Every structure is written in C-alpha cells, then in structure tokens.
Image (cartoon, rainbow, N blue to C red; front, side, top):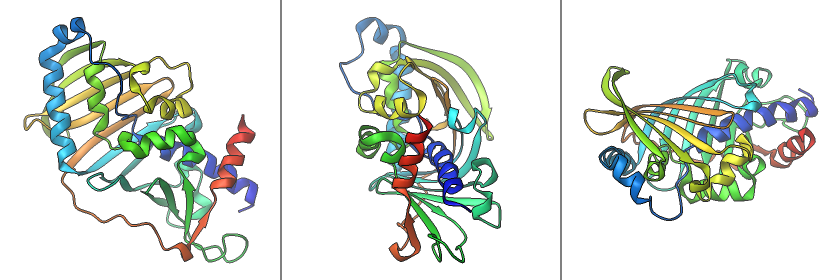
Length: 277
C-alpha cells in the first residue's frame, strides 16, 4: 500500500476507533443540577446513578459496540471487545477491516486494535518491504484525532464506557420509556438529554469528532433487573455510539505490543487530518 493511501485509510479508521473508545462517555464537570431538574427526575436519576456506580465498580466489561461518524460516512462501524478501567483505561476489540477501509493491511478481513496508555495499536500483516517492513502493529496517539485537550480528557477518566451514565445528573430531562428485552435481559429503558456545556473536559473530546455546533448529548439507557446497565446509546451532533454490555467483571490483561513490532504513524495521521481541513 502506498504511503498516501495508508495515511488516508488510517485517518478514517483512527477517527472511528477513537470515538468508539471515547464512547461518548465523558465525565461531566460543573455545578450541581438545578432544583427544578432534580425534583422532576429525582427518582429516575437516582436509579441511573446507582447503575453507573455498580458498573464502574466492576472494573471491566465485554461489550458489543457500533459507531457512526462523519469520518465513516455515517455508516455504523461494528466491533466487539473488552474494556478494562480498574487500573487505567484499556481496550482490545475486533472489527471488519473493510468497514475501516483497511482490508489491504490484513488477509483475514479482521482488524484487532488495542488502546493502552492513551495510544491505539492496530494489528496488521507484516509488509515484505517499505516503511512498515516486518511491523505487525501500527501505533497512533489519541491526540492525533482528539487533540491534546480531548486526549487529556479521555485519559483523565472520560473514556470508560460507564462514565456516560454519570452525565445524567445534569440531564435537562429524564423519562422512563418502558420495559424491553436487551440480549435476553429484561431491562427498563430511560431517555435523557444533557447540554454539551455540562460535559467539562469531555466537551473538547466530542468537539474533535462531532463539531463545535453540537449542543446536547442525547442518551438512551437500559438497566436490567440486577441494576446494571445492559445498553447505552448516545448521540451528539452527527456522531452516534451504541454499546451493549454483554458481561461485567471480565478479567483480561491488555498490554501494549512490543516496541520492536510497532510502527508509530501518529505524525502521518496528524498530517492527513490537517490536509482534510
């Protein structure tokens, strides 16, 4: 693959993967919720807050997720993987290479990627020649897409997939939609909206992919009969992320790949995104 094609491919794929990992799940910051909002949805917010605390305490989860962004042409990119946040944020997931236009980099049609210590690693087939000769992983720092502020927000705890539930204490409205089945689990469906201005450091993270014109984070949350979230769908601007929590408390070590096997293409991705606008 030519270097220019590689850069363009990575620009699209990294944008999709980064926002999935960010999960539209930023921790919020600011003053406590106003009295009117608290009185109107006090019981519902308390239920969701408890679900958030229980999920966060689990420390890890197996998830099925999809993301649609302007960088993916609005087409959802699906992936399945394991999040770990008990001792720093980490993720390992698989996704179809074709959906990220990375099919030329792998023979089996699947891309495996990891997030470790604020950097993304993409597993590829070793190239026989060229700048990627012998390398089996590509490394991209999250700041290449999210910017320094956005990456700092994610690394500060805005990236674990349960953090988005905490934003609901600033919701302008929370409603109980009804009971539904989610992956075989009877769950109660809630709907809420949160002003983007309440998202604190995560606002920069969202702005990097959703644009500065986005004004609210729209959330749909399903909580099962054990009090744990079973699904979290969130939309901000033109970005939509859907997460199904398949299980919690999954123990898995997610290490950074060996440096000798890794090619750092962070600068190439930054240049590619700058060239796009």
